[in-house]
Image (cartoon, rainbow, N blue to C red):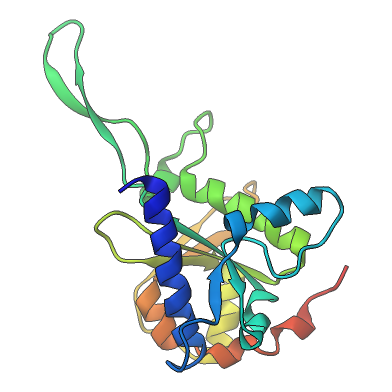
Length: 215
């Protein structure tokens, strides 16, 4: 299956899962993929035009889901495992396996050298933050699943702290990645998606729109 087909299928599965979570297992059609993964909204925004509820990868196609999508942006990513290739040493003629891409690995964020390209998770987060700020959303989330791995959700520490205040202590596994002061991002928190959905109550998002500073 091609990368684009994998991504499309993953987005559809997530939209159904988030619909069931949001409706307490009553409906699976509250959220769906945005057209072109939000590309239309991006083009129109460059023209100074707004596009209702069509940013990032998920939109509300039922009125009950709009409190979430008007408050939060969701990006969905599938795949991105580290790639390897067989290389031959020019001097010894021996073959060896070499990683040719970081893939989606948390340690690659910590290991990044100053002159190297940012790891892919930071690239995604930077783009999401720009879109979040330009659309006036309060929080952004990246949901990803590597090949043969479980789905995870990434958020800012600020978002995680807000959700803890509203839902109580999180008992699942937490990966918190901290960054030095010169980085634009202070910290990210990564949780297993299933743990997040079992812990986080949909009602905790209902009054967040009142906290957004409208432009």
